[in-house]
Amino acid sequence: MREGLRRVALEFCPKTGERLGMARSTLQDRYARIQKLGLQAANQLQAFVSADTERPLLKQLAEEVGEAAQDIAALLLSGTWRTPADEVDRRIAQLMQGQHLGEFGVDPFGYAPESLRVMVPILDFLHRVWFRAECFDLNRVPNGRVLLIANHSGQLPFDGAVIASAMLLEHEPPRMPRTMVEKFATALPGFGDLVYRSGSVTGLPDNCRRLLENDECVLVFPEGARGISKPFHERYRMTAFGHGFMRLALETHTPIVPIAVVGAEEQTINIFDFKLLAKILHTPSLAITPLMPFIGPLAMLPSPVKYRIYFGEPLTFEGDPNDDEAVIAPKVAVVRNAIQVMMERGLRERRGYFV
Image: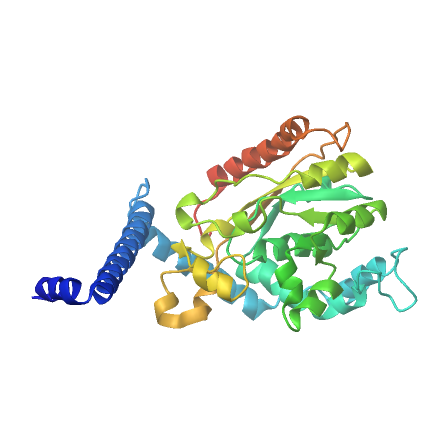
């Protein structure tokens, strides 16, 4: 019947008939896209559930979550996860000795070490309770100027927060990495000021250069938004690295410490990226997770996976920072490969996702 109406419309009103045909084609295309997304999500979940394990995955996950819950409860009840007040005072006092702080304890980028005092309980909780992070070879990070280069994942940048907490709360002497962040993060109302006061800066080459010339410790994620927003089926597959960090390392004669973060990939399961809505909200990506239809934006909060952070040996490079990409690329590959090796080590060594 509908086909007959369409033929009548084409005969007596060609324009209306043409519009009906276009609308029908558009609906068919959208339906096909929805089907394709649904199949992709089903395939991802099926691959996850049918992973090669010695016991059923759902049973394994249930046991891991139970063990993680017991550990978290024990930590919260004991209170041992909190950094003692006198230790916080000591570490903040050492940060305040920075030679580039003004008379009010603030540097030209807005970084105020004293303001980190209110951040310590949050970093303590994330680092020692929620993610129960283990750091390996943290002492490899040298004093003076240094670039920390890490893989990026997890939809929200909790990996950066945990690396920063390790440097602030466990490294001797304490250091606060100056993280390079996307422009959209510093533009968020109320959040931008917090970003600057905690030491982060907009990820521009000039900003990074100035910080390195001031002998700062700078944390860079060369994958950028591409890395943090990977779909779940691409976990632990690093995307292409930008080359800017290597040019700056060559220009400022800065050693590079590669860092591999294992665990963040599973904190939020990204079924697919809702690019249209992300564009409307002016964000690099917007992950759709399995729980989002039920609990909305709360589904973006990370699950209590266990983090393992591996710090590699410092790498030094020589050469002209203005060389062609073909010359810079092999140097970048050395750093990327070092991270890949540590990442594979972490995947071999871990017992599970939550323990």
